[in-house]
Length: 184
Image (cartoon, rainbow, N blue to C red):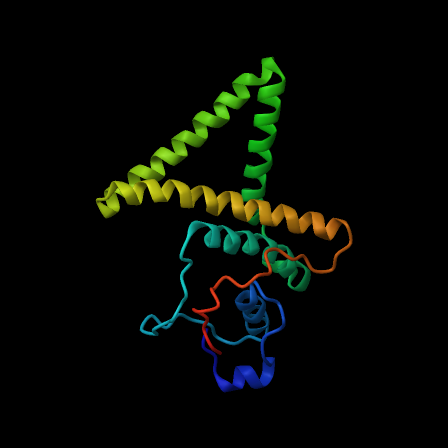
């Protein structure tokens, strides 16, 4: 994110929010009436997650951040942001009910078949686009991590808020190894 000096002079710097800080910072910029746009030629250095566990933690924290952002900027929470949490709750409920009540077993099968269909579509699309089957398999894993980690982080933050915590906290350990940090 790049900003003009006049924006900084009026808005100030970033808050202490660790996750979602770009959205937390951009909300007052929009509210102050500044023009915001994409500079497509700008080169951005961005540290990628090097394994699926680090990716999971990052996405989980994004779910947590959405609830924290809602406290600071209520307009930043839209119904669509709750969809991954609804997927998580629906999936858990379908599995519990389907395994414990025989008459509800079709609910479990419908959930599994629907989930399998979505995974098959992700596999097909990624495999065709990149002409590699291994990318298709990774697409299945990353799709599930994206939806379930975000949904779980969102629910975790909602529960933390319900028990009275002002700010929800997800994974707090740094994503980068000690030997591969980015200096600021």
